Length: 79
Image (cartoon, rainbow, N blue to C red; front, top):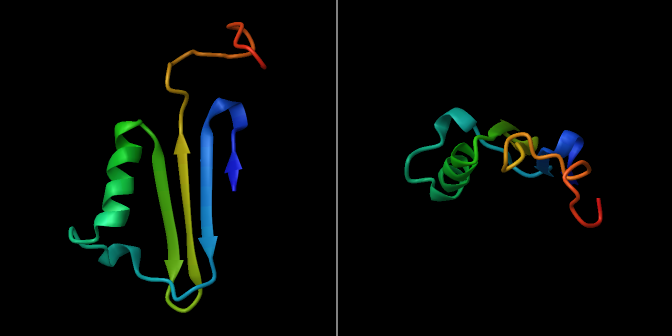
């Protein structure tokens, strides 16, 4: 799902698959490490909740790109 509360962007990816132990993510796990580094670069937050045999939920929240930018006040078309 994709949500935009208070102009943050929040992405939630969830499944009911095998799950994994997030503490065991190694440096060779390029997929999640790549996502984490991009989220960090954008001053965002990433939360990974996973349990073996019960699936995974990853929540990523990214703040507005321009601090203080409020599209509804700044005359952005369509807002």
